[in-house]
Image (cartoon, rainbow, N blue to C red; front, side, top):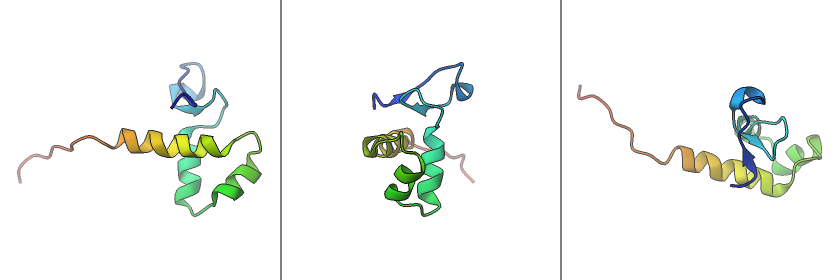
Length: 72
C-alpha cells in the first residue's frame, strides 16, 4: 500500500500511484472496462505491475466495511 499516495495539491487529494499524476480510479476504470494489465502497462510505461496490484488492494480495503440501510 506504500505505492498509493495522497497529496492535497495533486489530483484534488485523490489517491494516486507513487506520487505520479495517475489516480487509482484511473487504473480501476481501465480494468473495469476490460483493459488487460499488459495493455495498461504498455499505455503507461512508467507504471509497474505492482502498481496495478496496489490499486486493486486499495479498492478492496476501501469497500470492506458494513453498509447500514434504513429499514423499509
